[in-house]
Length: 540
Image (tube, rainbow, N blue to C red; front, side, top):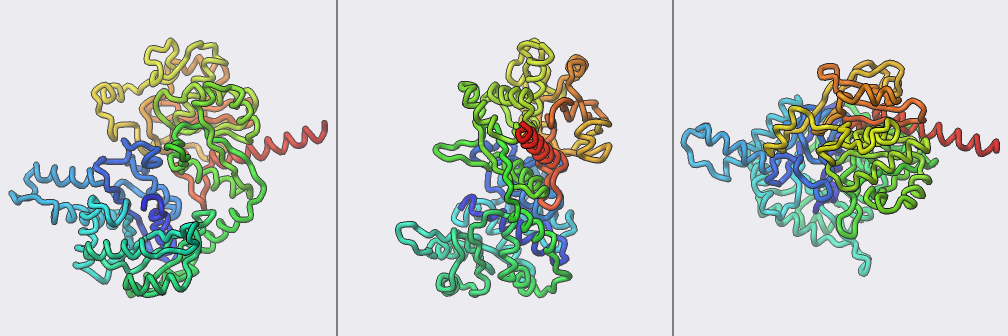
């Protein structure tokens, strides 16, 4: 089922195989007719993750990057829409030589072509392929057919892993295997027999249930891998290795490990487990709620980046979800919530909803010297707040919210206007990695320790360079610019513990073994501010 952990399982197996000396890459297949993930609602589908080369993808590509500590590029992501579009375009170009083009075999053949290409581009020994959704969904049949055809052609090079959930109903108190049995039967009906079953559940799979699955699913007991809930997803590769999953995979493929080294990974996990001192960080956003539930997946890369940086300092982050819309109605609530926090993050987003609440939160953090990190839209709204309340530009705004504002401190990029007005919206934003030249003597320059860096973008609106001089004269610091276009990439304030906004998304490049420099400095500023606060209260 959705959200059960297929992405983390895929990423964990990839990390294990990499630790054994192999080149590994991962591919995500999304069974949607959307051509990419860029137009999907983040509340429904989760975060849109942008690759280095500018593809808008599913959030699992982010998991692959974080676990492998490598960039995953656009060739490693496909949707049903993109696959069908490729086949239709080829048919229109007469590349099928007049054949009747059919769902089978031509769609599975296109899938196989893409998987092969991804492996070649990454020079990979292993390609881990995650098929989204569930076995029983008819939209997945073309992908299962592609997998069956690959296995038929070379059964010694293709393995199948089924990730399945084993519920423990509270009223019964017993782990149930029947849903997994039916999942295997559905897979068998598509012509596929799983080599491994990863048994997801609240608790560890016991021997009686393992043996039952083995008998009814035709999988050896040793190839049924327990995957209980964990407090930290980075523990999963270590759990799998306790059951020797990596060696079992290699044995089935007739391979030997070239080395064995999960030491750095184990150290990172231990550091996270040993972090006891807590810091509180609020994410002021609007993509949390779906009915009665709060889903953090819209900001998953931000959450993971906070953890990576906090653990590197030996502290434990407590993350709170703060609704920016409620701040528009209740300033008292905002002051109470933000006042109790150690730091504030204003993440990316689009549209008018909740904007004034975010601006209020930014103003509070600026005035009360609360460490703040603004990401994309968060940076843009920090500029709006500064323009209104420091630079005296009353009514300043982004033209995304007020198209005819007197002070358009954030405006639509010139090359984007034609696309927006012509409704050519999918895949047309400023996407992927762009250079950022850092200004000497700034917090950003100190954080990175380099003059030029490359960061990933996903936006249409930019800092309005026509108003830059006025804002700088009032104290706004531009600490990073794109060297080709001179577009503003980073802003900050001098007389503040940490008030930094980025036009790009630094969270997309943070890894557990390599935390992002800006998130590290944000956490460092929190620790330093807290220490000063305690010293001051001690003196008084």
